[in-house]
Image (tube, rainbow, N blue to C red):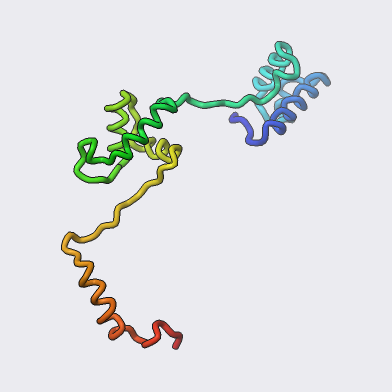
Length: 164
């Protein structure tokens, strides 16, 4: 059974209630049924209390897997990325997760899956950006001229949008 969700206080209270029921003479199975947990959990809590007292029932923080890049390496990665993609051999300025994963592998010898690079960049306060796609033939001056000259002539109402 997975651990129930809830605050640490709620989980500790649940463990204490289970052990009170055990102390009242109920079997492991009956305590498990009443608390809605596996009897093996009750036994584990009982053994922990015997070894470490009431403090052994406290919920501890689970840090998870250690980071692959140290704090200084992540800071250096940001500096490398700020140099731009062309500085690392790419033709465009666009940083994709696959490109960042390749730079991390090349510079630090650490393999990141490109799907996980997004989480890494988010933890470094980088957000995904998409460049504006513009035609190479685009003429900004002609567009501005058209907005000033042609747009007032083709719009439906002289004062802009108005309800009918």
